[in-house]
Image (tube, rainbow, N blue to C red):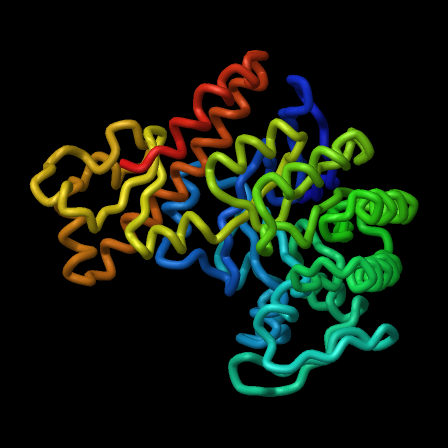
Length: 374
């Protein structure tokens, strides 16, 4: 079998919103795209068959978590993550930079060595350098590989942000060198710089010089306001090369995704659909439903008459409310399947409106609707 080369093509633009397509050896990814988060080689409480039926085209997994368990060698002995998960979809692997910051019990950053950290599971010490992160992701055989960056905690200290950004640029170059040349995989650089527009643009300029296959925006959705995030996206949107995919890491609510598509973002990932589902919060085209509310106890209508998943018609609101109140695992599974199907439907409909040329008008109408509390 001849492997397809990694590529990206913009099909249609509506103002800054873009409809495009990423080509990978494991399949096509239509953009704007939402990637369900399969952190540890699984999307929590959801079968792979459910994801495929809902229109999933690409899944995200995480280097940090899979490095700790089950370990690199166990996965690579089968040929990579696709075989380990029995997944034929394209896979993007995050480098682990964010998790090193947020989860490790003890982390030391050494400019020359990399990140020295202790596992949040059992305290074992690991060293993850830019070169090692790329080596691990190569063994996972993921389709899209992320460089190792330092993702600082949110701060107003510009010196801290600049120091972290400079280190991320150094590590990006080392990651690129370690990656070498592989036309079948995409290597993405990560733009850091906090909430400082000048730092973001400086970082982006350096990453463009290094020449990556795509550009991610990191260090957002870490505690800043919605408007602050939008301001950064607005500041960089004219400077990211048009022919490269743009990936906003860790975002977000349905209305955030729509607003960010309008600012030129092509790819999203977020744990919100499944995490909120496990807490009985369902996203719909009419707004957000809290399935623990008493208002649903005698509502025997379908879970979501506008939904695209089988669970939306098969189960009633009253039944799903009962499952959550009885603390039954099936409630979390139904809600997770629903929310992921909704997110995938959200980006699909967004693509349709970009192609139709009325995305801006649709956005103004749909965003307030999505925010409603039902």
